Image (cartoon, rainbow, N blue to C red; front, side, top):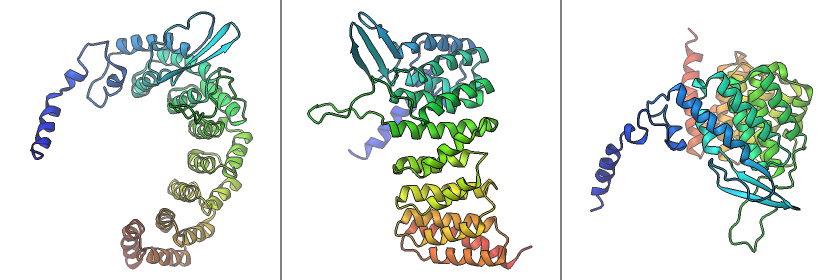
Length: 365
């Protein structure tokens, strides 16, 4: 009987056609299905997208509502509402309010008209900077703006950076932010911490500055510098990852990333190693060959398999981008050591690189 299940499922899947999931000419389709339209070979008409955007920008401001009486119904997607009493007034926040609808806009961003995008941007930036909004919503909104930054004008990017800088500098506390979970409650909901919000803002700011490098200020570089040295490992890790998107970096920031490759937290060290290799592939980190070689050698000697693997990857990347004979011999030696590592992922990274490089050494023509 068990052998019939695969065929049964194949039959069921074959019966679900694109026209069933996303009928042509239909406007009342679930946002989660409509988000998949490009993957299903469907292009929504400009009029239907405009109509949908109009609905979203009308309902999304109710993500944060403050007033008397019963709060209006939030008609977009959400998981739950957070409510606070403020005297005779009530504060009601939808969390994460409008997530599915923003994903719909993200999926169709390349066919979004300029007027539609301007409406969306104005609505989202107001909510992202709303003094009463929750951290969870701020993370969702700022990440959406960063992912849509290729549609933004320079003025809009400037407003996004102002919002992100406020978050990074800590001016984001809301009286509605959920308290720490109570162990006596049967239903637990973990709130977004201030550190998580700051880390998310760092990631978003790097994406914005990658498109608008002229907006980079010294305080932005200082923020990444401080984040790499933060006591929180998650913040250090995200800062190391975000830096690879920065087109304008100071030399001391590059040195801090190299230092982070030896962090006591293996996730931070692994992320730093990946960033260093990425920057070398982009030809954006070419002044520290000797130090990077030392970092790769130490990483391959780590007790962590993931650090050894990414150290091996870094050594292979350096070998591809370094013509110095002495360093090349050192890097080949590092790859030889990794090639007999006890962990298969380290060996496979080394073995993929060594044959090609040895062939180049033997036949430079």
